Image (cartoon, rainbow, N blue to C red; front, side):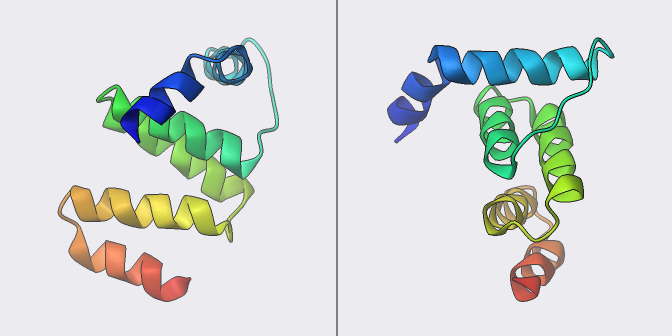
Length: 95
């Protein structure tokens, strides 16, 4: 599965989304992102070992799309991996 993600993250389509996101973070532009785009960005950063950037992308996803199931599941999984069991359970219960 990791290889499938790696292949996706190398595609020009994802690279364009990532570049647009990183430009936005630098203040060079403002952009709207779909929840799946931000969840993919969060997954990319998580796979790179950058949990802080992953959390930032995920937080933006949930600010823009607070009821998105995929983003909520990712957030719950992230909280679980980081040892925040009560938060993970609370997020799952909200779904």
